[in-house]
Image 1 (cartoon, rainbow, N blue to C red):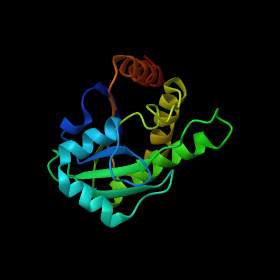
Image 2: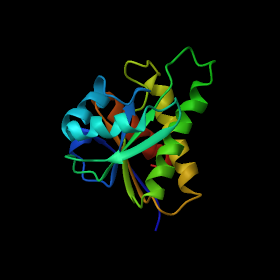
Image 3: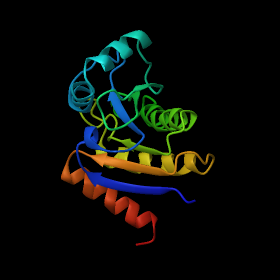
Image 4: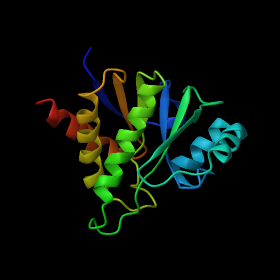
Length: 173
């Protein structure tokens, strides 16, 4: 079965996929943006589970249950803060996607939804992050068979249009 990549304009906390990815901070104890929304929707058990983990370095990922979310799992990954592009940001961002996909596969999650990691308060330019995200997911998926459906969940209409155009171009449309 071929990998299916889709983009949608939605609230990631409402998606019925096996795993959603949280663009977390290194403490994993909640924050603003998608991180805060996921913590609010999942309930206080998520915060307790994250306390047990004890943090996560940039580029790595950790997994918890989804608790009150429709998703079975939350995969927390810490994206890089944008520092102009010369501080290894692209490699760290790609690692976020790869590590999240590896955790999803290890836990039998055949479907996963990603937010646009690092493009909020961390300042990564969305026009650079989106093609990197798609390329990393495609490259990683070619090496594994577990994850078969990937959603790029966009909070803004502009991000949604960007992902749609990139996916359409990659599919020859």
